[in-house]
Amino acid sequence: MVKALITDPVDEYIINELSKHGVTVDYRPGINRDDLLKVVGDYEILVVRSRTKVTKEVIDAAGRLRVIARAGVGLDNIDVDYARLRGIEVINAPEGSTQSVAELTIGLMIAAARLVALQDRLVKGGEWPKGKYVGSELFGKVLGIIGFGRIGQRVAELARAIGMNIQAYDIVDMRDKALKLGVDFVDFETLIRSSDFITIHVSLTPSAKYMIGEREFQMMKDGVIIINTSRGEVIDTRALLKALNDGKVAAAALDVLEHEPPREPWEIELVKHPRVIITPHIGAETREAQRRIAEILVNKIVNYLMS
Ligand code: NAD
Image (cartoon, rainbow, N blue to C red; front, top):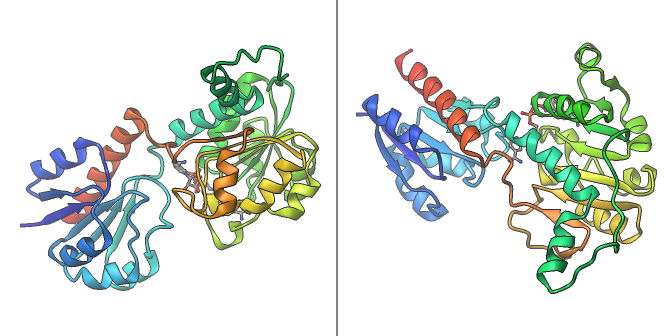
């Protein structure tokens, strides 16, 4: 009998469908590390999202493991090379959350440009700050997309409908794709220097870590708006805080942080900053994305087990 352990909250479809295929499923979302290390040796399948860190130590404790399934995109919480070395298949569902993350990105852009969260907080605190802040439209502004993969491209399509002028940069040459979507494919520095809004959609590769730091903020236009729904490590948090305090960055909206939840003093200061909007890594947190991810994942797991 094949056994699966699920250690993060997932759509019930995964549990039901795996059970229908004869898999015994133990659903333990939120299991702590010590308990995971104790029990993981009993399972052939491990299903995680981004919370569970599937390190060498976990993989070494998982003697029977055949499949690690990531219900989502990013594999940066899994030691993929080590898992593959041990003959374990690593599966994910990269296309399942594209639309949800792209929609959140557009929502955050509008919210940042109009300081929606700040105005809401002030009203809830008893103020009526009408006329206190002047926002900006997205229409006609230059949007710079860093990382022109699935989500970056979908953001471009949605932002075009709003009337933004879009430029993109990617480490891979995406000129053809960009041309088809009416996007200018530019080099990194051009994007940094000439965008009114910058939104980040890179995968967390070594070259992407801290790719936006003090040097980049200095090059940016005054009053730039920064959106990050990719991975927190892409931005040097302290440099962002400084750029916000200097007035270089007008507002920032972040769905991801280097530490989730935030723990360093400068991260706490950043999340409390009046012109910063923080959402707790909810990019894929929609019914539709979770169901899509579940369907893709179950298909892949079942195909693998039957092959
Ligand atoms: P993708 O792999 O389709 O696209 C990522 C792109 O980034 C690729 O085109 C790659 O070439 C590019 N890239 C990598 N390193 C780069 C660098 N140093 N400079 C420029 N470009 C670089 O991935 P995707 O599905 O579009 O996802 C994008 C990001 O969104 C990932 O980091 C993913 O983990 C994250 N994500 C977040 C959530 C959330 O809940 N907020 C949900 C899903 C995905």
